[in-house]
Each structure stands twice: as C-alpha cells, then as structure tokens.
Amino acid sequence: MKLLRLFLILVLPISLYAQLTREPLFTSFDGTKIHYDVLGEGKPVVLLHGFITNGESWKRAIVRQALVDAGFKVVTLDLRGNGQSDKPHTAEAYQNNAELKDVMALMKHLGLTNYDVVGYSRGAILTAKLLTLDKQVRRAVMGGISVDFSDPNWYRRKNFHEALTKPGSHPELQSAIDYAKKSGADTVVLARLQEFQPVTTRAELAKIKVPVLVVNGDQDKDNGDPQTLVDAVPGSRLVIVPGDHGGAMRTPEFAKAVVSFLTK
Image 1 (cartoon, rainbow, N blue to C red):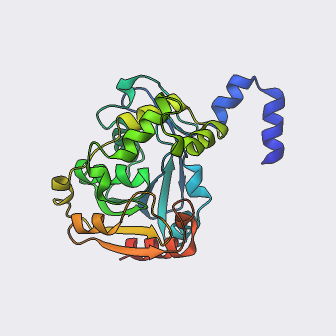
Image 2 (cartoon, helix red, strand yellow):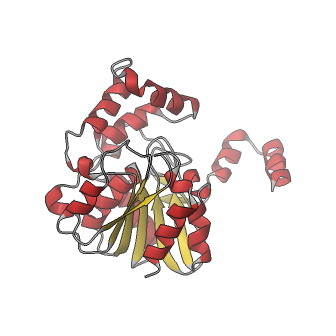
C-alpha cells in the first residue's frame, strides 16, 4: 500500500492524487462531498466523531474493530467541514441540521436501514438530534456529554465560537485553538460548527423512545455530569469507563460497553 501511494504521488498531478485519496466520496443533498468508509458485514452502525477531529479518530479506537468482530457493518465519515470531506465556509452550509442530513442521506445511499448510532462528544450532540429526525435509528450511544447541550445558550458552545472568531477572547480555550490550527483543521469551519450546532431540547429528549446508552470517562468533566443526560432520556442508562475526555473512547472498556449494548 505504501509503495502504491508513493507511485501515485510520483506519476499523478497533485490535484488528481488528492481527489483519489479522498475516495470514497458521497455527494450529499446540497452538493457537498462527504468522505466515508465502511468496514465489516452485518447490522449497520454509524460512528459520529467529535469536535476538532474526524472519522480517523474512530479508526484509532478499539471499538470500531470490536463492532466488526461482533458482526456489525461499521460506517465512519468525516462530517462536513472536517477531514477529507468538503469544507464550505458559508453559513448556509451548516444551518438547518445539514450535518445530520448528510448522515441520513449517506445511510440511504448505502441502502442501510434500521441502524445504530454511536456518537462521542460533539458527535453525541449530533446523535441526540438524529434521534428526533430519523425513525431508522434502532439504538444509540452518546459518549462524553451531559444534558447541557440542550440549552441553546450553553456556555461551552458560545465560548468556543467566540474563541474562534475573536482571538484572545477566551484564554482558557487557547490550547484547543492552537491544537486545531496545528492539526490542520479549518478554523472558519469550526466556528460555523459551533454557531449552528444542533440543539435538542429537554422536551425532545423526553420523547426519545429508542434504547440509549450514555458512556463517560471516570476522569472526564469537560462537558458536565453525564447523569443529567440519563435523567433527561427515558429508559437510558449510564456506564462509567476509565479515562479523560480524550482517552475514554479509546479504551477496551468503552468498546465492551458499546458492543454489549448494541448486541442486545
């Protein structure tokens, strides 16, 4: 594979090589191209990544292969604006649950119905909204999050947006902004993602009928108390695994909790 990649770099124009390495691509509802990967055969499950990252984060986590080994077809994607997907800068590209429209359109494109969803951090916020939009979702896992995202004025969302659009406004978030720039993330896009982050109200959460598992690291305090989310979603339950916000999703315990829940 490495030799093939080197050969392609040497013989192809840079623009064409860049396009080929983005494959597979799916053209979404508004023409935005979304990079995705599918691994395994069986019951479908889509993994939604967090903020300042992309689908590669799941490929580095044990849970992806654990799900494949348990008989799942695992779909990962770079949500619009991230990774190898298109990165439009306009407000319109991120309004009205555009990211979730991408997810639903992709699953339809792949012919996958009655699927499960695993979202971590910001991906969990998207998962909550997806539960209100798509009746095809069978079960859902939300990791690294509390119920605080149900507040449209949630300070974490507002502070990140201000930190990205008003340099120096939030020194406590500067390390995250520096990391984003160093990793090559598009900070204009990141600001849009915070500006138009979906809000699922407590009233909407209370109407969720599918089984939900909430998972949180024992050292993770980044997004509030996960028990508050369990209290807001009827019938949901909480599993605590080792790790902080960045590490919990990569642990064997996280993988075991997710696989156990989704195989029921």
